[in-house]
Structures are given as structure tokens and as C-alpha cells.
Amino acid sequence: EAWVFVLETATLARIVDAYPFDPERAGWHPYVMFTAEPSVLGGLLEVQDRLDPDIERIAGGDNVLYWEVERGRTLDSTFGKNMGKPKLKAVTTTRNLRTLVKLLK
Image: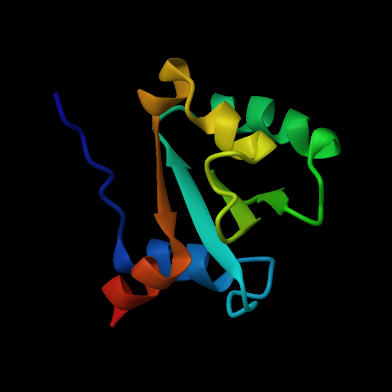
């Protein structure tokens, strides 16, 4: 089973432009999480207070969630572990901001 997100170019450009962290921060990955169920974003933002800002940060956007994580820590970070839950994997997809920028070119 596979599903896709289809966005208008202008919508994707707004999402990329709204990235709240430094997308070129050395040693860090910039990500955007998309969801088929916007209600899950609120639940994901609830972990914000438990995150170690030396490892990762998240911020809400317009029906997306922005995530910045130190390279090498994606899978073992607090937020990364939460994203791997089967319930979330069925309704979300995460893309590197740099990939999204390339799609816009």
C-alpha cells in the first residue's frame, strides 16, 4: 500500500519559506513533516518541552511540522523515536528541506 501528498507549487514554496530554523546550520538536518491527519500535529508538538535543544527542535507550521536535528541523531533523538510509531508512520511523511528546495527548482 502506498499513498502520496500532492501540493500545489505555491503551497510547497510557502512551506519551505516558512522554515523557522537556519536551514544551512552546519551539522544539522532540516526536515518538514507532512501529515494526512492535521490533528496529529498537536500531539507531536506536545513533546516539545521534553526535547533537548542541543540535539533537536520542532515548531508547528501551516499543517506541517518543522524539525531540526543534529546529524547522526535522527533515529535516537526523542522526537525521532516518537515518529517511528506505527500510528504516525501510517499518516505522516518527513522530507529533508533541501529535497523540497530542489523540487521547487
